Figure (cartoon, rainbow, N blue to C red):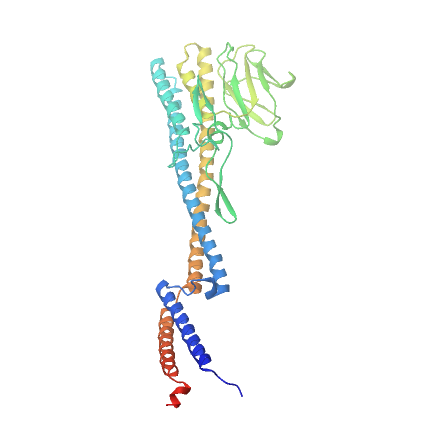
Length: 399
């Protein structure tokens, strides 16, 4: 037969009161914070899961900040590219106007000044900054001005770097294009070859920029169309070997190796025209060459022929620059579209994560208040019982 001492009864009753009070305090804390889990001990597995969701939400918030930054930067770039497009179109219109034979020398000088101003504007566009004060087209050197005039040319001092910004756990987006790609790497001529007239020509022949009729037949080399007489020509390759010969008719086509050019006017014996493989020409050089051409004399038939050849080549080069700018703009637009799609996906994911975290961590107030009332009643009952138990002892029966 076991015996229960007075001290044991007191300890048991007191322990019960303390446990009920602890449970009551925990429920009160939950109601005060609105959270079911305030410490890991409240729900160890739930606490771990909540931390994982917190990290996922924090990552999503950081990706959103990254996306906002890159969206702003790409928007600045897109606007700049739009301005470049407008500038090039304006220059092309002026070039067509200046190529008209009725325009006198004074008017051409005025047009040259207008193009020079557009050239200065183009340099300024190349040195634009984003909202954070960083240069858009400097590559990794975002604090270094990328373009600077150097005599009659414009020098690019940025690098070829492109910053890749993390916009989701599995996605990085480039935040710009280096200036070398936007302004410098424009295909020269028609994109396959560049046709030009020898400045030493004595006749009045004018050559067109030409076209490619069969890309499979094109052989990349330096060619010369040499007029052996006023009515006959030969085409020589880089090794000075005759590729083909023909009889010249003004406006007729000279075709060989899958390409075709037209020569008009009256070339003289020993006049030469060159066909060189296309490389690249920066936009600044195109505009500077146009200024130079407009400022030159074109009084004699020979000068006029060189002028017409240069102006036709400039129009073709401006078309290449416009196509190039539109291509870069398309890339920027595609990146912005991807950012929009990613933002929609990220927003939907954050809603689901927040919902899961709420279900896991947030308190059911109705249930908690009911439990609080029960715990309070239990504590009061335990306290009342203890006051009665505390009065019971053997001495109460020995009076």
